Length: 302
Image (tube, rainbow, N blue to C red):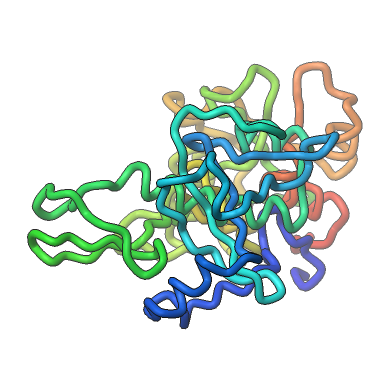
């Protein structure tokens, strides 16, 4: 009962990543000189968005003075035209606005392919900004392979963009799902529980461990539903559903402030704004997608 699951936001960018070109220095040079090439600027972690509703990406020409001197990261091809991301410092654009992407996404400012491409770009810009040195010897590294690798000239180590896997679970019991409020959430926000996959752990083990640690529930059947890149700063959310026969919560007080069982009717009321002390996860986040799919019985066993 998972084939009808909704595709989460930030997925399936239309760009051709053209990975085979990343090691071709001649091709990379030719693409940077291509008059059709465009770059998406980021002021630190904030992408340039344009349009009346700030729903479009602010692509700039490669000879734009705003991005002069910056190292572009090759994202791929859009109908054969090269596309890049460029990380900048404190600059002011001649048009458009640098917006914090997470807030823009959750606030509905932009979506679809624009959000998916920006997600990919932000993950790479973040990585380059936070990993300028070799983790083996501490020397400064240099960008190679169009921005998909950093090489250390001192110890010859090579470094690749990092993605951290995170499981996020819809916990189901007898026609009800478990939603929880993390201690760091806004006062009324409830969502699915989540946690990082630990070394030597498979997805199913992580789901069972996190559910037991945070809610005190044992789980039986576990199934993968869908995934979502979450570049804040560099996670891959692995959406799952897990079945439990336990009903009483034992909360991990350091992380979970409250947890509740909700029926599908309760969840509909939650999305409709009918709870004074509860708010649902945003639909742009995979937690919102999982919850809405469960509500409409697109996923689940009961």
